[in-house]
Image 1 (cartoon, rainbow, N blue to C red):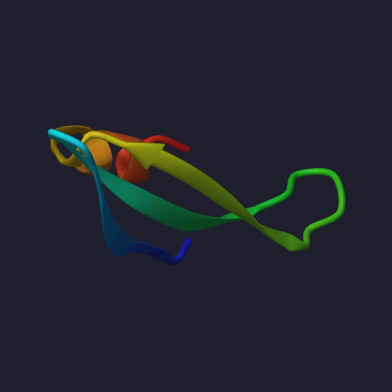
Image 2: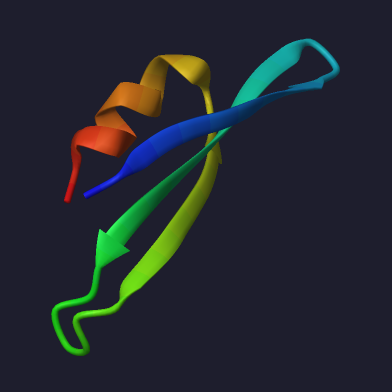
Length: 50
């Protein structure tokens, strides 16, 4: 499973990070990309989940 944090977004006083990870689908076997915008402290937690 490939994963990478991409970019940093700043809105007002909050700093956010956009994380994208590539996940293999159980049904078709194809890879899909899952994107999420979150607080930078939660990125490692997001990337470690399956």
